[in-house]
Image (cartoon, rainbow, N blue to C red):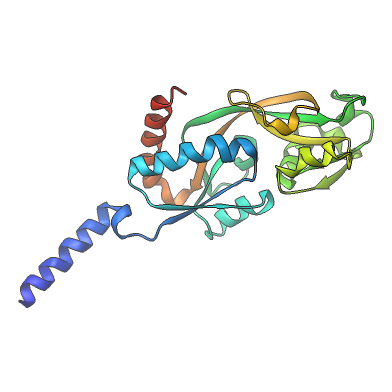
Length: 224
């Protein structure tokens, strides 16, 4: 009887070694409060995790916490981030093919200038997340003359312009997915393009290889 018990334990240990979905605690994957993330990227990544047989809980998180939570290993990854956002964080790795191409854009209310001069010539107050501000200041050093008002819920940025709290905001949109309805009454000035990926902590590099294949499979199934 004892011999059979040890044999069963050995089989369970072997199973746990090769099957994350059976024995491991579900991963925690954050996602940004952005309409395109919620409606496009999140379902795609959920389907990829199901395809790979990897259990995960998906939790909404403010933009300023996402990368720090991954680096501190409080979370295991994020649904989708532009490369410029996560590139400086060496513990964060891209997983699989890009989910979409994105553009960093300047949102403007009607009847105000809406071009690069807003960033580099005419000091203004610009709403942005902490990470978007970092990227913009790196790309456009002269933008330091502007006042940045940090809001780390991306969904709220267009809303603040639509209710005339601010005239300008930095936003990120996909070039392949529908534009959020909240942008319909705003001017949109395109700044630069990037690729956006599912990301994980580098300790999950083996799982990342499984997920990369699953992401490719799901994208093909969806015709993306």
